Length: 67
Length: 141
Image (cartoon, rainbow over all chains, first blue to last red; front, side, top):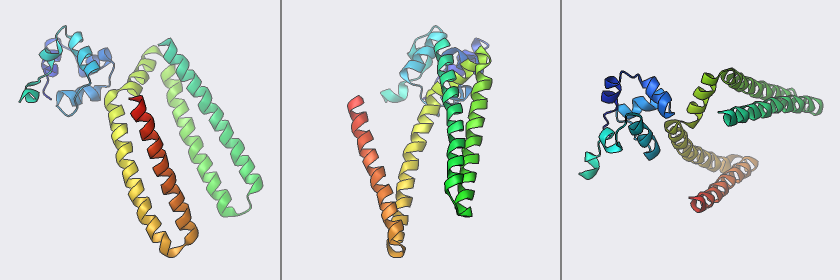
């Protein structure tokens, strides 16, 4: 699943480690989500979206599900 | 975080007690066993177990010394991706173990009856545990 996490991190000048600590996962998990290897759970997706003050749909790309 | 620290402390106590228990077990085994092969096997096994316990205890102790270390340990243990990897590894591993044991059981049938019966027992036990756990988790979720 595609996400805007990398774009949002760079916009907020945040490292993967900092985001990972903020949402309670390891840096490797954030890396895997950014490259699309791992799909975050609903709870984690919510935490990441909330961290950037956005909705889940603004952070995660669900267009492939709609197709 | 205080709850988690308490949990880590309890785990460290349990691991330390396990280490002591293994030493006692080794001492008892050494008193009762005669054959050098058996003593050698038990010695190696106890050394390996103690090394694992001490390594894990050291990791817990170093993590529990600071709040950041504790948080890092908590995150590492609760990470959902790690949990998924562990789950998939276990599932694939069990299938591979079962197939391997099945092949060994068939081979043992032609070679040694005692080994065959032992392996059959192990396979039966594995199947029984799988059934029990499946029923348990189906009811839970």
